[in-house]
Length: 175
Image (tube, rainbow, N blue to C red):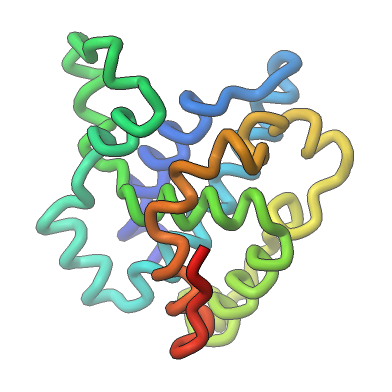
C-alpha cells in the first residue's frame, strides 16, 4: 500500500516541509521531515484505506497544491520551474490538512495511528510512528513551525471535520 501512495506521500511531505521549514540545520531538517512524513503517511492511509482507493487516486490524481499554496500565501511566487510544478501536482489537500491536524494534536495522532494499525495497511506489519505521537524536545524544536497550531490552523481547518468523522463516525467535532 505504501508503494501505491508513495508519490502522494512524498509530494505532500515536501509541500509541508517547504511551507513550514525546520529551524536549526541539517539534523533539524531531517527530524522535521521524518515528522511530516509520518503524519502524511498516517493521513494518506486513513484517506485511502484500500487498494482500490489508492488505485483511484493514482488514476485521477490527488489535485495538487494550488489551493494550499493560496491559503499559505505561497502562490504569490510563480512556480516557473517545470520540475517545481511537477511534484506539486501530487500534493493531496485533504492529506495535507489531516497531517496538519495530526502534527498539532498528539492525542489525535495517537487515535489516527491506532485506527491505521487496527485495520489499515500496517495491520500485518506494525510501523512505528513515535516522532509523530510522542515527539521529544529535539523533535519539537526542529519542527517548531511544522507543529505550530496557529501557523497550521488554516490548513488544518480545511478538512478537520472529515478527519474526526473518519476516526469516530457520527461524533465529528466542528471546530
